[in-house]
Amino acid sequence: MEVGVCTHFSRYPNAPSFYVKLLKEYGFTSFRGDYGWGGIEESPKKYSVSKRLQKSDLAFMNAPEYGLSGMLILAYGNKFYDSGGYPVSEDGIRAFANYAAWTATRFKGKVKYYEIWNEWTNGTGVTNQRNIIPSAEDYFKLVKFTSIAVKQADPSAIVIAGGFNSLNGVNKKIGLTGTAWFAQLVKLGILDYIDGVSIHPYSFQLNDVKLKSAAGNLEGIDEFHDYFMSKFNADIPVYLTEYGVPIFNGVGGTSESIAAFTIKKYIEDARKRPYMKGVWLYDLIDDGSDKSNREHNFGLFSQNLKPKKSAIELQKLNIAK
Image 1 (cartoon, rainbow, N blue to C red):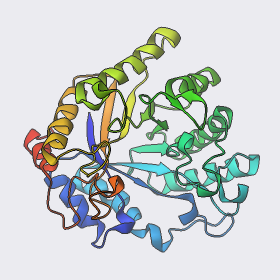
Image 2 (image 1 turned 45 degrees about the vertical axis):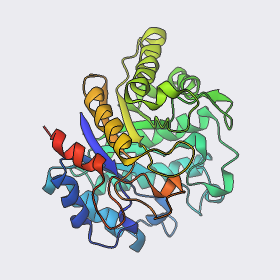
Image 3 (image 1 turned 180 degrees about the vertical axis):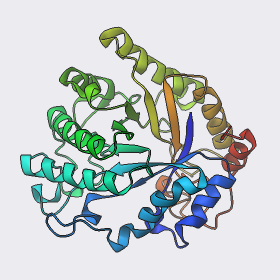
Image 4 (image 1 turned 90 degrees about the vertical axis):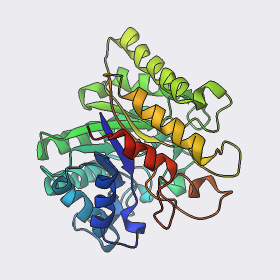
């Protein structure tokens, strides 16, 4: 099972190799990061790596040299299509698939995983349409044509999709649970085009205390997996592409010691499940220094790169073996 970390190379001050070496030092096997469409197609139908994506590009290109696998997120809008929002028109979907094909060609033999979009049902990355979530049918079309394009460019690529939370009840933006939404996609035939489902099982702010523990959280994912086994006879490989425990002074926040215990237990127990193919922790480095802001405090390392207890405990696990 992969044990990886979510990254934001474009925000980091040092060269990508510095952080990739840090991941290797602490025993991780993979990293996940954005490779946004808007940073590749800056002129219509012309593709190149923009300045803002150069660090991410280098990280993905050089990851195999460090024995790491890359999970590249194909995502977000482009100003030339669908008003920069979700690509749902025929032209937008075709253009997104072309960007994905160019990317998979560039990284053939370098990038192992491609994730199609990130949190479609949350409106993540689409600020002008966050409250207007396109249908499961729209997402299915995007996944279908993008997956075909990626696989044609690199038949060895592992393609996953989903990017939703299967634990937190009804999503108000779509009026469905994550499980029900993905069931719609399965009925449409999404399993013909993906190698696994991406889940973001955040539970730190849920009312059900059981789900906040490593054991309870993973049991909830077992229920998701078992549902599709029983209803569709589908043994779906599961990729937990974001999981994190923020250390902050607010609702759902916890201490460094409890976060370390929870994350360590989570990795240990996840590895016992054959259907679970990887966990990518969110995220590598704190995004800020405000201890009352949850988004600033998910890092395994503080902003000065001091390892938190969770990073130290994971290093002791020797997770790469």
